[in-house]
Amino acid sequence: MRKFRLRTLRWFALLLFLGLFAAIVLRWISLERLRESLLRFPTQQIVPTPAPPSPVPMATRPPPIGGKLDTAKLWSGITVHAQVDPTTGVAASVERMDPQSYTIDLNLKVRVPTPNDSMDELATVTPELAKLLPGLTTLIKSGSVSPLFHELYDVKVQELRQNLVRLEQLLSRHNFYDCQTILQLRDPTTKRQAVLLQADMDVDADGSDADRLPISAGDSMNFKPFTSYRWKKKTAAPNAFLVPAEATLLRYQTEFAHKGLTMERNRDLRIGIQRVREEVDSLKGFSFLIAATDPYIVIPGIMARAKGAGGVGDYAIVAVGSQLYPAIVGDVGPNDRVGEASLRIAQEVNKLATPNNRPVSDLKVSYVIFPETAEKPFGPPDLDKIQARCEGLVKEIGGASVPLHHWENLIPPPPTPTPSPTATPTPTASVSSSPSPTAAVSPTFAFPTPSPSFSPSASAP
Image (cartoon, rainbow, N blue to C red; front, top):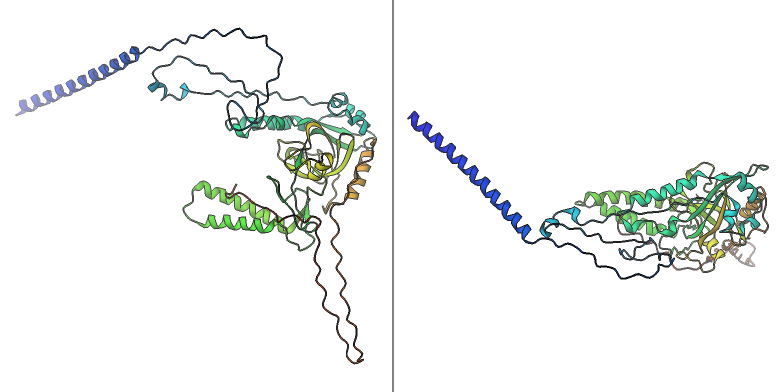
């Protein structure tokens, strides 16, 4: 019995060995067949075709390419240099499975500009500046380039790096090169500080104020009924954009209450609810500047946060062509954009300006901001006061050769209520009739525009 068991174990070990040996042989045979199949169809050498003789190259500028997402016509005005680099590979069935066999290498080359720091350099772009503000020539000699200029372009480069694989979100050539210089100036006699920012002029069409202008159009694609400059409401007149904002808040809250939403959608709705709730509270309690009627400029966020570089409410001068426009800093924009003024200023500079059509595309606009001149608490803009304060501040940096532009108030005062008629007393001495009820007064608006079109996106941002 013991011999029988030992014999059985030996046969079992032998069969196991034979099975492993057969598996190894079959695997080797399959690999040899695969190698023979690859060698059966050798790849052809790619012989470049001789190119025809090319004409003498001309010194031409590559055309800026703009439009929809297209590798041949890249958006954002970025010039594209593209080529296909084929190399010899193996079988298509193998290359299809290798992600590295079909790739695009993105290498965005961008030249970061150098700021202008002399009046001669500025005069090449804006020759009228030295004539309009003769004191700047001396101030610029003793002034310096603000660190904000380099910080601004560092932010722009960082934005390019973050969005490089999302090409449709890259800054356009126009928006990348939107700032010529940022200079810190100080008058040695009056000690008045100023910041000179030279850029183009985009249009800001934001803002609303039910107290001064009950109806607002809000027809800009990126319109917001808020500005950074705001003050407590003075009347009970409801903001024209309050009802649409409350409707959006209710829609977000209703959807958020539903079960079964994805984690991403719940997160977006939470963010949207918080944002719209803050907007509703602001519309209920505050009034804002109105881009169509109030002269103000917009500064980037990095500038508003820097000490001594200008902030909301500070007075400013906008120099364009042969004109000087008094203004205030009324709004804060993105960190990577410079050069923006209210629709009121834009249309005074160029009658064809609209929320979607900038008045000045070249870097020919000079913004002179007087830091720490804001007067608080904020309130409805007084155009005469803005002009008087700007005139005094300009004198403190050497004066101007032309008078500042005078802004006319486009918003008339509210209508005076009609006095209530008094009833004639009856002949009977013992009975006196009371006055008749006050007659209803129909309000008159400065701009009888259509109802506001507040249409936030259906999904929470």
